[in-house]
Image 1 (cartoon, rainbow, N blue to C red):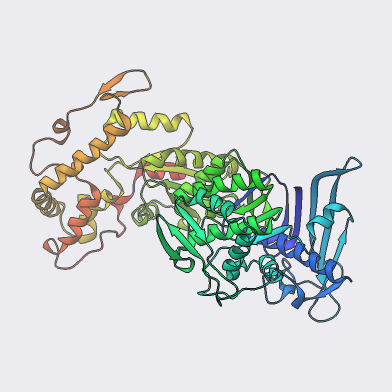
Image 2 (spheres, one colour; image 1 turned 180 degrees about the vertical axis):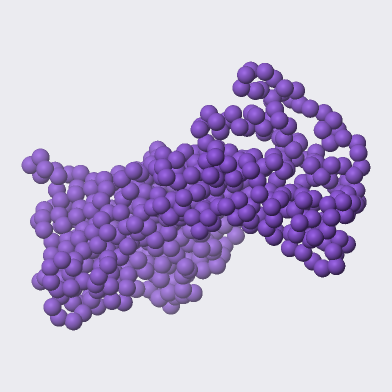
Length: 564
């Protein structure tokens, strides 16, 4: 098994160096270099496999088993390969086996050959480990990119063609052939067992007779119903490809590029179980990339997590929980930008729709070019928001982090409990003075200022809207209050930091019996919608309620933004 790896100057990779375990998970933002690592390992090993088989020090590009580009010279990071010193890429591998007390290792260096279309390959470290990794007959590594489908039909080809296809990552074009040869080797039952760990009830059969059949026939039995392989979903085919690679080629290293891409979360969890089983039963070492928090959760405790940014291993890699938080909040692609100082302010908001918050922030002097808004969607993700806020606070100390939560008809006692939680984490929180963000655009002062109508006229018009929708307004108020009870109360009691308990307040005591009710009891989203729909009853033309005004300048928010 490979215990240590170093890849330099390949595609997005500048300097990738890390120890490896049985299962290794590459995590990072888009364009961080995850796929480049997988491709770089396969490309470099396969180049040396070909050179060793043909002899000499150079090989023609056309003879390469795996080539992720039509022109190999552009695969070097930064500048193309040249035939002079300095413009090379290297792969260094160290084994967990020892010779005379020293771990076996070797290094492969790639550069451009002197003649057009030739690649120069040199390897240092002639030992059994190098011979095993670069064997032509038995592929050490297999690379499986995301599977886009399979052809409608396949003719039978030789095992040599299949080996080359696997080396090139194109074995999906010959998936039926692989399944046929698995059946010939009498290992179809084993393959089905692995497939069934991810897709229970699925069973593959290969009713192909090479003496009579032109094309290879593969059937999939799904809960008693037989269908051709080509009619199966992409997620299933991708799993079949991974398992078939493992059973037929028996590689020592399996390189998986986002194997979760076409799978339902439940199947992603099961795939992780299957990967663990493959490493245990077949001695496979797996390196995979993923953006799936389900995969990360499932492999937590069983894998080494490798955080990548800018083509390197981030030395301050966090735990798997760190990746889960980023994925949970959709912040994986922006975290690096925060660390690099692109943003001076990060607002974590419970609102998935951020345009209203942006307007409020702009009105309160916030530089939106340097401000990042990350939704945490609901109170159910509040813990993730708190964790991310702490990550940012500890790793990007010049970046201001503010957590936003709507008031949502909370009482002062309830607000104090919410604030206490954030104060204990030393995190600033902004709770809206209005019931929600949208409500700022429905205040009497705001509408009066942007329409030119008197506050008396606006109040009269709005009271009519509120009265006409009294029943729905009351229902929404009650729904919000029930949400608060479910999340903050236990046995109808609210426990404060002092230890005092506050009983659940009477609903009608808060809402009152007046009709029209106070606009403070109306959900802002709802009232904003009604105001927009009925604007012509107040004015003769439609008015943009999201316009700036002095009324949406919020002292409590401005104080947090300016540290006043």
